[in-house]
Amino acid sequence: MNVLRMVVLAIGMAGAASGQEPDGEGVMREMAGRVRDAGWLTFDVKFEGVGSQGLVISRGSGRGQLAAGEDGDPRWRYRLDGSLLEAKTAAKHEYAFAFDGDSMRWLDDAKKEVVEAESGEENEIVGYGAARPMRWLWRWDVFVSGPFGGEGESPYSAAWLGKTEIDDVACDIVRVDYSSRADVEELDLYWYIGEEDRMPRRVEATYFSDSGGLGVAHISGFQRATVIDLDAFTIEPPAGYELKERAAEVAQGGGRQQPVGGIKVGEAAPAWELLNSAGEKVSLESLRGKVVLMDFWATWCGPCKAAMPGVQLLHEELGDKGLAVIGVNCWDDPEAAVAYMKEKGYTYTTVLNGDDVAGQYRVSGIPTFYVIGPDGKVAHHVVGHQPGGHEALKEMIEGLLPQGG
Image 1 (tube, rainbow, N blue to C red):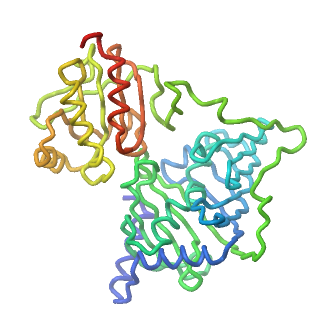
Image 2: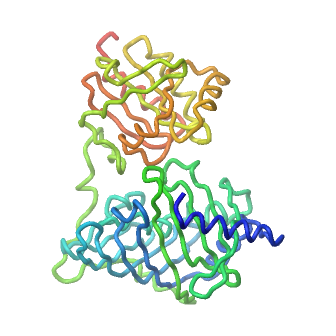
Image 3: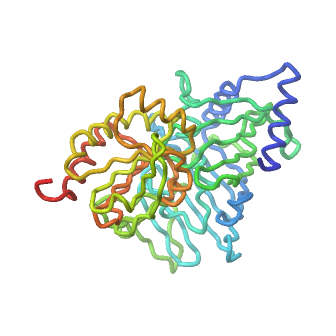
C-alpha cells in the first residue's frame, strides 16, 4: 500500500472514531447539486501522475470552465487552457481542450493543429499523457451528475473516509467505486470536497492496469458566473493552425473505432498459459487453429455478469464448429469465480488468476472481449456489454470459422 493511501485511511479511521461520520453518498449529492446550481464555474487545476502513473501522465496546469448542458442535455460543456510538461521527454506544451455540446477539440501547439472529434473519442485526441488526470472533467455526467445528481439511488458505493485540509480548506474525503462500469478505466476515485461550499478540491484516480499509481488533479479558485458565453467552449484554430477531423484517423477494423489501449486488430495475440477451474493448464498456443473468444471478467462486475448468458450461448451454438470460448477471470477471488460459474451452470472454460494476462492485453475495463483468429492474430476487440452484443460477436465469429464448420 502506498504512503498516500495509508495517510488517507488513517485520516478515515480517526474521523470514524470521532462519531461524526457523514454519509458518503450524501456528500457527493451535495457536491453535484452545488455545481449544478452554480450554472457555470471557472477554476484552476493542476494535474500530475503519482507512483507508476508519473511515467505516463504529464504534469500540467490550466484554467477550467464547466457548464451544465442545455434543455436537459446530460452532457456538460467544458474547457481547459494551460501548459504541461510531457512525461519522459520533459517537453513543454501549451494546450486547449473543449467540448461545446456537439463536438470536442484539442489544440496541439507542437503539431500546429486543432483536432476535432465526436463525443466518446476524448482519449483519442488528448495528447501527451494528459487524458487520465483530466477525465473526471469531461466525464462529469458519468462520475458525478449522473449517479449523484438525480433522485434515484446511486449505482456506485460512496464511502466517507475522513477529513483533511486542502489549501487551508476543510474537506471531506469520499471514495467512490466506479469499477462496475466497463467504459471507464478508473477503478475508483477519491474526492476531496469542501466542507462548507461542497466544491471539489482534489480528485485522485486509480486504474485497473497500473496498480500503485494515481492520476491526481488539484482544483481551486472557484468563481461562479451568471451569464454563460457559449462561444467560450469552441476552440477556433489560431492563425497558422490546421483544423483536422479525428474521423480521418480512426483505425480500420470492420468499421469500428479501435478501443483505446487494446491490442490492435491484425497484431499477434500475446501468448498465455493459465489454470482452469479443474487445475489443468490451458494455453492460447494449444488452441491454435480454432477461433478463440476471450472474455475478461470478474464476479464483482455487473456488466460482466450481464454479458455471460450471451457468452454461454456462443459456446453452445459454435463450440462444436471451431470456436473455443475462454473466460479470463481477473482482479478477483478465484474461488468466487469457480463458485459463480457452477451456480449459473455456465459450461465454457474459465481460467483463473488472469491479472497478468489482462495487463498483456492492455485491458482497461471489463468485460473486455477479444476474438483471436485461427492464425493467432487479433481479429476483434471490444470493451463493455450491450444488450444483444453476443449476436454481433456471433456474426463476426462465423465469418472466421472454417466453411461448413
